[in-house]
Length: 162
Image 1 (cartoon, one colour):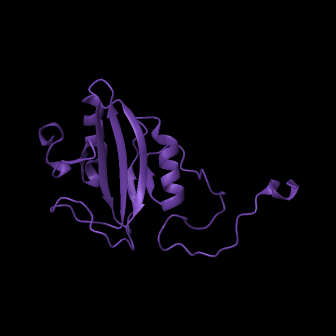
Image 2: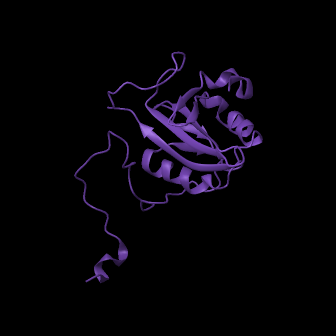
Image 3: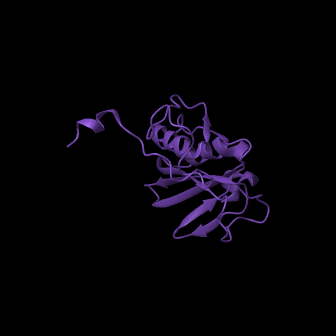
């Protein structure tokens, strides 16, 4: 796998019938473009993880520095029947990563959701507006340090429901 995507991916690991690679954040789009050219024509999923209070050991190659956030993309090559998972580390003090929208337009809503719930900014994304929470919502509900016990969202039409 390293010969396909270069040294930027760290050590490729098998996991649950798929290959997992760990590109550096700066190489995220370059490695994704190479994967696309290599036949991974579909983005199945894209999400984020907040490891703030997660104490279980993380399965990362030794040369990868763990950060608070991780962005994970699941790709598939239907022709070869292969899956590829890309995992990149995203620091809390600069939670940004380049968008995959230009390679896979299906990334649009998935990246918006990761932005809305975790506060990760996808540079170059065509519409960074919130997708799940109201536009004036403060904070990102899936962050481990998000305050709990807040007043629930009151939607405009909620008063009409009986």
